[in-house]
Length: 253
Image (cartoon, rainbow, N blue to C red; front, top):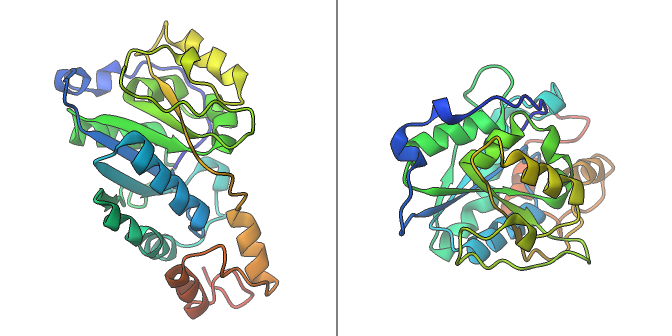
């Protein structure tokens, strides 16, 4: 979903006045993007945690388009989209409105998170967007394309997996200062605080995410080497991978 490029352009011109307005009863929409190559149980747990902690009404899952940092390295959009649909289907049981968004897959050229958020904000001008990212992504966030402008569009919701991370996820007061929410990247905290002078103030919150050291790269390597991954993947996703010989020498993705 993201591509690195830290251009600090202003984002105000991209929004209608209504999209920058405020409301006391604004719906909450979570946005969770990723390559999902393949989507694993860690992704599912993060999405479930975000639904619970943020009290989301809608969760939008966004399979990555052509990300700058993964040029030519991903499986086909068709396979990743279908696996994403299978992996997150169970979330509908939580009562959240689940949407698998194909806009990045349909976008030509390199795809940026900022552009995706702009589109989603314009479709949902009266909603509060929460961009759900992992702790590893938080480490690199200030290298993302127009990362300061992302803060003007959405609240960061970061999986807090390190032992020293504060797990305060209280969201009652939307004017709370950033330093009341901490994770293990103090440099990023300072960068966001500095960026507030140039961008619409964004808030970062942490999610009470249990440690689940699962890597899609490791899963692909395990499958290639014939290692059992049934404990790491939804059974429907694993069946799809096997049926299409993904991540093996027979794969044509």
